[in-house]
Image (cartoon, rainbow, N blue to C red):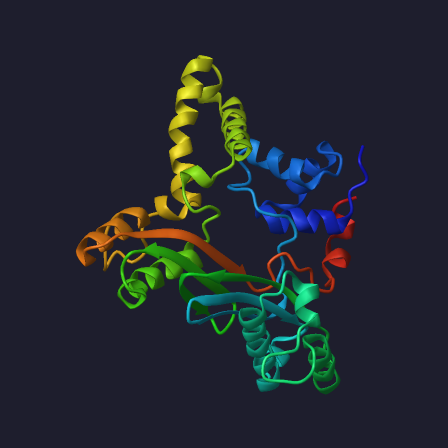
Length: 306
C-alpha cells in the first residue's frame, strides 16, 4: 500500500473538492500518482472536473496592459495582500509590464536582465531595491506579450488579468467592445481552449474514457450495449466543449446577446459590417498553482487518516 502524506491528501482535496477519506483511498489506489487519483475520483463520479492539483492562493498582482498594438499580461507575486497594495509595489509591476512591451524579452530571466522602463537599473536590481524597502519576497512569475488588435481586462484589483486578441478588417476602436465582452467572458468562465479545434485529441480521448468509466459505475447504465454507451459519450462531448471552449460557451452577457460567444462575435461583425475573429486569449489568475506556507491542516487531521 502506498504511503500517502497529509500534504498529498490536502492537495487532492483542493484540486477536486472531494472529501478527505475518499481522497486518501484514491491516492492509495493510484500509488501516490496525483493525476491518476484525480481520474479515479472522476470515474467514480466524486470529482466533477479535473483541476490541476495544488492550486492554492498566493498574493500579488495580475495586470494586463496595452500600448498601441502591443500588450502584456503579467503576474508578480508577493507574500501578503497588504504589501500587494503598496503603491511602490504597484508602480514596480506597472514598470515591469512596460518593460515587457518595450523590449520583448524572451522569458523571465531575460526580463530581469532588461533595463526597467523609466529607470536606469535592471528589473532585477529594481526588484532587490524594493525588497529592501518592503521586506517581503517578490517573484516575477510569468508574462505573455502579444501584438495586434488587443483588448485588456483586469478583474478585482489584480486578481485576474486577461487579454483578448482579435483579427478584424475593422478599426480597432470599432471592435473594442466585442473584445471587452469576450475578455469579461474569459475572466468569469475560465475557458481552457479557444474553440473545438483547439482541444488536443488526447484530452478528448481521456474525457471519453472517464465518461465510459462513470457509466460502468452507474447501475442504470452498466448493462447497456457498448455501442449505445459510445453514442451517449459522443453526445456528452458536446457539453465538454460548451464548458471548456470559449467560443462554445454560453455568452454571460445575456443582456447584450443570447447564444454562444462564437455567435455573439459573428453577429457583432455582421452589425458592424466587417469580419471579427477571436484569435487568441490569455488569462492569468493570481496565485494559480503557487503553494503558500503550510497551515495547521496536517495537525488537525493527521490523527483522522491513520
